[in-house]
Each structure stands twice: as C-alpha cells, then as structure tokens.
Amino acid sequence: MTILITGATGNIGGEVVKHLIEKKLPLRALVRDRSLVSHLEAQRIELAQGDFSQSDTLDAALQGIEKAFLVMPNTPDQVELESNFIDAAQKANVQHIVKLSVMGAGELPSTFQKWHRQIEEHLEASGMKWTHLRPNMLMQNMRWFAQTIAQQGVFYNTVGDVKISHVDARDVAAVAAVCLTQVGHENKSYVLTGSEAISFDEVAEKFVQALNRPVAYVNVTPQELKAARLANGEPEWYLDAELELFACWANGAGSVVTNTIAQITHRPATTYEEFAQYYAQTHTQDFFPTARS
Ligand SMILES: NC(=O)c1ccc[n+]([C@@H]2O[C@H](COP(=O)([O-])OP(=O)(O)OC[C@H]3O[C@@H](n4cnc5c(N)ncnc54)[C@H](OP(=O)(O)O)[C@@H]3O)[C@@H](O)[C@H]2O)c1
Image (cartoon, rainbow, N blue to C red; front, side, top):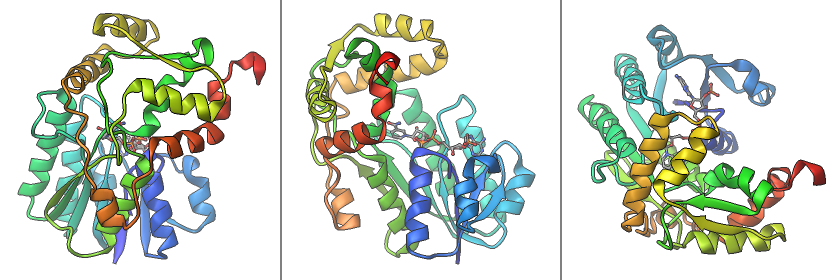
C-alpha cells in the first residue's frame, strides 16, 4: 500500500510526511520542485514531480497508489486544480482520499468555505472513499503577524474580542496520518479545533510570555486592514475572501471547540501557550527587528 502525499513542502503536508516516515510506511511525495525537498531525497523518500494543473504528471504520480492526502493553497483556480487531482486519482483506481478542507465548509457564506465544499462534493461524487478534515484557523498563521510585531510590537485584525479555537497544523497532520493508515475514518468529516477558544488579546499575551517582549493586538476596520495589506502588495481577491471569513468569525463562527483531535490521536490538542513557546523558539528572528539580530 503506497500513500501519496501532496503539498509535501507545505505546512500540513510536510508534517504528514514526517508521521508516515516515522510509521515506516511506503510513501510517495508529490512535489513541483524537487530542489525544495532535498531533505526527503536524503531520506530516500520516493518523489513524484507533478502539478495539479498538468494532468499527465498526475497520472504518472498516482500509479500504484491506494490512498492520498490532498492539499493546496487558496488560489482562484483551487476548485479546478483539486478536482483535476480527484479525477486523475479516480482514473488511477485510488481507493481513498483524505482532503484538507476548512471549518465551516458548506455552512459559511465565505469564498474559501464555498470552494472547499465544492471540492468535497466532487470527491464524494467520485465513488472513492473520502475523509474531509476541516480545521479552524491554523496557529501557524502567526507568520502573517510577525512582520508588524517585529516592526511595531503589534498585530492587526478585525474581529474584536471574539474568541477563536486556533488549531496547530501539526495536530491536523497527526489526524491526517491516522486517517490514512487506520480504518474507520472513511466517508467522515472532522471539524478540527484547538482545545480552547481564545481572543487575539489572549494570543498577544501568550507571545509576550514566549518572546519576552511587548506584543499587543490592535483591532481595525476591514477597510483599514485591506488598505494596509493592499499597500503591502497582497492580491485584492485574497484580501476580500479573508475579510469575508473574518466577518463570519466576528459573529462567533470560529469559536466552536471540538475534541476530535484528542479522540483520533489519543493525545490532547496543542494549546496556544505551547504553540507560542515552540514558534517563538523556532522563528525567533521573525519577531525581532533586523537591527537587533
Ligand atoms: N491557514 C489556515 O488557517 C487554514 C485553515 C483551514 C484550512 N486551510 C486550508 O489549508 C490549505 C493550505 O494548506 P497549507 O497551509 O498546508 O498550505 P501551504 O503551506 O501553502 O502548502 C501548499 C502546498 O501545495 C503545493 N502546491 C501549490 N500549488 C500546487 C499545484 N498546482 N500542484 C501541486 N501542488 C501544489 C505547494 O507546493 P510548492 O512548494 O511547489 O508551492 C505546497 O506544498 C488551503 O486550502 C486552506 O484553505 C488553511
């Protein structure tokens, strides 16, 4: 049984690869650029060069694969590209796909949630077994805020003091690894959250402790956030989609807490405090102005 992992250079796919290496299971990683995964080549992990936009590369990558983990970033053609992968997998007689989706898929009116539900529906209609992993906001999104923390000691969002059940990408990957290697998770959807919902003021406190420097959360209007990030060069379509999601969160849609991670992995979900300590240690240079590094 060989398992294909897509997104092997990414947040979640990269962690899924680590779990499967640990379990010593036959594994193939789909990558667009082999030079980004020399660490995997060094461990003799089988690599397949492929791109969701080039179906012929997927046919070759999927030969002999029984199960696959599907993930890609949010792009305007995400539904088309993930559907290409699903179609190629069905043609290659893949039995089961574990798809990285998002919390609120099929429920919230925001763009990313609608796209993910369209892909989920395409997968369900394919006849293959499926598992939808629906994480809330990843703790690793702290990378979005590192630049302003480094420069101004603050980070910005629009959701006020609402609480969000941020989840660690490493926990999402641990769940994916179980779903890919054990039975009983076929044709199920899992909402994956941290073990607590906390406000951005509380997130700031965790980083004050972890970094031992002042960090504060500043609430701004959607218009202010969009203008600042447009000026920073981010694409307008992406900002509009994010602001739709932030509006849902401001109404409490991101506060739900589940214990699915503990149930599936048999260990508690990472707390924000634990994450902040880990992230501050592994990304110290991101949080301190260049002059001090
Ligand atoms: N961030 C959040 O808070 C959050 C929460 C819930 C759900 N999600 C969902 O998580 C997904 C992103 O996951 P992530 O953070 O692990 O992503 P990521 O770190 O950005 O990694 C994306 C991976 O996809 C690969 N990729 C990109 N385009 C590709 C293509 N055309 N063909 C094949 N591979 C391609 C990338 O490879 P290269 O190295 O070649 O670019 C990379 O390995 C999104 O769908 C998002 O909606 C995110």
